[in-house]
Length: 483
Image (cartoon, rainbow, N blue to C red; front, side, top):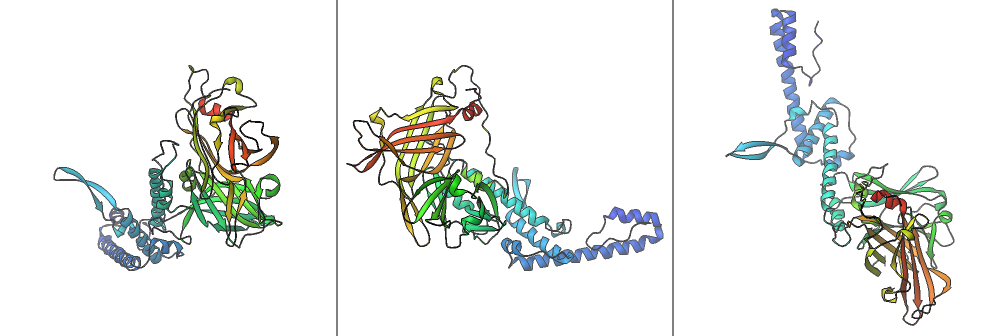
């Protein structure tokens, strides 16, 4: 025997009814046709009610409101909700078809019928709309980061891209009981090669109970809602970095201090300010380099970082020193609105004999070449602020480094807080009689070592030595060499 009649809204195709009629005999045909008409009429009435409900609710409910509204798992409500999402989807992403008109191939919008509502599972159009919006944002971001600065080869429209996409950043502090504390950023500071992000307030958890700090880029899930996205609206996270805070004051680098705060740093680019004499957080600052900043901040997920595309080595069996020459360095030393030094150094190289302890040595400023020594402008110090206090930690600053390879592609990039430490040595240079300070930075790809001399007469620092050390492992992976 054929199965019972289907539930309303799930009428079988006509061929199933006719097959049933043939099986039961011709005498059953009138009854089956009456049933077919009854169920088709019920479907038509339901479609009309869904369309009317969709029109009624969509006049006052937008996509953001619907995302906040819990779903009710009943047939009429599901149909109405699907109908609303279908209308929102079709208004933002109308279906297109190509037609020949006046001997020209043209594209026109095709309205979606309400009959497709019942053929989709609950939440289908909501999910399709959100995924389409995410894909649209990704496409928009990739278009905005295409224009690059001809000097640094870094995206030159980052500030515009951040504003257009609604991108912002949050930090999530997790304590040892797995409780999370979400902190919204206070403000941003844009420089030539990096952006500094600041967090401060009065509701910081104590450092003693914290285990990790996660940095996320957050972007509105529905970016078309307005030009000024709200932090209370639906957003998606992109994990950028995770820092371990359990032994911050022991394992991290102490950058400096003043009368109120003490600064500690962790790679990449994290600076934590603690109130002096306690383990209470005063502020957090993160400095992010522009190299693939938008991709890292928008294209990852809440649990997985965006994976930078690997460089495909171009082998060269002619040049015996392939990968050892034609590097360019762009260096920026700054803090807040102040820039202490900004310079470009071209055609850096390393001889094979200068490769030591797994590093290429690229001399940028030679100690013996007085003509290349560089002055720093202004009084060097790292500015900080909280809700109630402001200050400057002397002899500290942000260092932005961009190293380009021989094809002018970004090879090694970072932005990090560093400090100048007083050396026990005294300058023996005839032109520079004063105290020597050193600045050192290191990560898994390389090191930066600088020497500066303080001239008491002119009240300024001079960079008298600057050397880059690049890991041979980094070079070999990039160029396909074997140094």
